[in-house]
Amino acid sequence: TDDAMYRSKVLFFSIVFFLSMVGHELALEAATTEFASLSMIAYWISFIQFGFCLCMPLIVTCGRAGKKFPNSFAKVLPYVTLSLVVFGSTALASEALLYVTYPTKVVFKSAKLIPTMMVSTLFFRDKHYNQRHYIAAFLICLGAMGFALDSKITTHYTATTTSAGDVIAAAAATLNTETAVVSNSSTRALQEVEGLQQDLQQQQQQQDEDTAMAQAWPGLVLLTIAVICDALVPNLQKKFMSPPLSLSAMELMVNVNAVGFLGVSAYLFMSYMMLVFVGTSDTTTTNILPSFHSYLLFYLVLIGLGISTAIWAYTQLLQLTGSVTAVTVATLRKVVTIVLSYVVFPNKHISQWHILAGIAVLTGIVLSNIANN
Image (cartoon, rainbow, N blue to C red; front, side, top):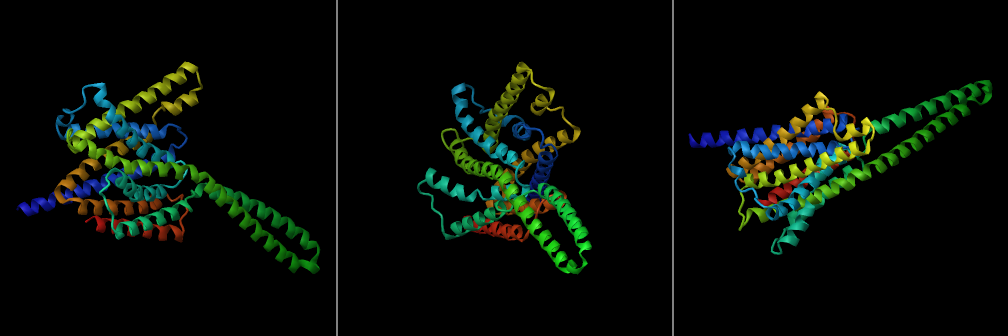
């Protein structure tokens, strides 16, 4: 009976974590895709995430997780650093989605093993990594590079290619008309038209790829900083969960997210008041404090509810089974997220390089998990 109860709990928390994260990721991509015109969308997403991640541990512990909240300004300051790092991890990754595809973001976030190894070595001098860790880091880095070098969004590519096609068709029609008059050289003229079409297509395709890569670089830089923040978070958390504070996971979650929630709220409020004071246009003000569309509100609630529920379920899973099962479920979730991203949002370019890069990243993650256990 005890064994059946244990298995039921493991299965329950695994399913809750899996579905919560998949729902969170899909809602996040939908919000950043459909409402990309809102310049402050990343800040509103962080506002919702901090708020829900503050409320969830208070609800599940009936308020007990908030008993160790710092009662002075001096005691709050250490949490500001951790909150800023968490904000950098989430907000910058959300902002990057304006420039790169969602699978690129997932792959880059999976590459945090590399900076984590570097940060852990600097924070803990006695921390050592074996050969499997370095091979895993190399494979993940290779996969991330594959996605980075081909991370353009199909909507931009399609639009420019269509316009180029119109130009090519017009040029071909003109040349065909002219060559019809000179019947003796029609074959040679048709060959010239076909050659011209191929040259123009290759030039336009190269131009589109260069433009797409130029548009993607800001997103890749933001993702790189977000991944570095990801690597800093667990090392900073260890300080709060070790003596003399010795906070539990839920207590730390309350303290950090409370500070982050207040910080983002203050920033959004000051940004709005500044625009009101200056007297800017309604359009600019709407970007800061949008008149929430029903879909946007639904996406934001799903984002906050998904991430907070997933963190709670993941914590419970770790306590029940340790890291092996929890990391396995998390890895499977990343694979499903990437597949669903291409299925639900098909406006993305996919090539054999994406498939090979994805296999490299997945192999690196699995190898890293084996090395850790």
